[in-house]
Image (cartoon, rainbow, N blue to C red; front, top):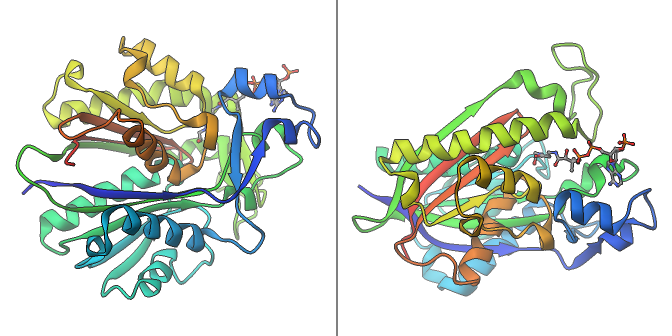
Length: 323
Ligand code: UT7
């Protein structure tokens, strides 16, 4: 059986925060942010707008694009998020009840690698026969856990959501290979605390995003090529066959480094960081939708999705685009 993505929808909150707005509150400049990251602006959720609201909006967008029938028969909802509304219930259960779906529901918390992790889990459920149609969402409100006084992190993140439907697709389309991994020894380099006061290794946990940018940069430039190659190998493809790569949008320089390491045409990489920054688990569906809207991803394209980040964790999926 072939499982693929049959539809996608996204949502970005109304409020746009430009780099020049951040110049007013932080010791930073639009020039620094653009040249070091590629980011120009990010969207910020309203005070009373939380991750479940963004997820629901992304599903509404999916329905607006593909028709209401796209939700018919959804029997599992997975939300990848590191910023859930509540410890429980899951954000996925909130989406499930909003749309009146007769479905199981749970969240996956793998930060920036979360959405591709969720795709892997969803596909496995369909192959196993436990589910027929899965709604896989990446949704985040990092603006609520960012330390707005820390220029090292505050400039990097934005809020957003993306939702996709996974189901059986015709032969020759859909997922061909996955690759994933985690290395919790890197927790000290990137984390946001919840109930714990310290990591098991003793480092203090703050209740907001803390990042050692240089260490995570090194990790990202190493693991992104590794994950792409891993997914391509597991798919039985050659790297040259890949037509598009949709990477996590943490830093345009990380994407450039990956294209250099893999000796791949940089034009094969979808880059949308400029307008929405890093949205953690929501980033890849946002970049994917950008690629589709630009006409850069069409039926038959051999696409690799690749995520990396907090955990540390990484995940990649190789798929032939089905619609
Ligand atoms: O999605 C999760 C995965 N996350 C990532 O993949 C992020 C990986 N890391 C990065 O993208 C980059 O390391 C950053 C964008 C976070 C930082 O860029 P960098 O080129 O590695 O800068 P740096 O941390 O080495 O800092 C260089 C200088 C420092 O000043 P000094 O110590 O040289 O005087 C920083 O204090 O830039 C300073 N700096 C800033 N200056 C102006 C750091 N942030 C800012 C800022 N505005 N916003």
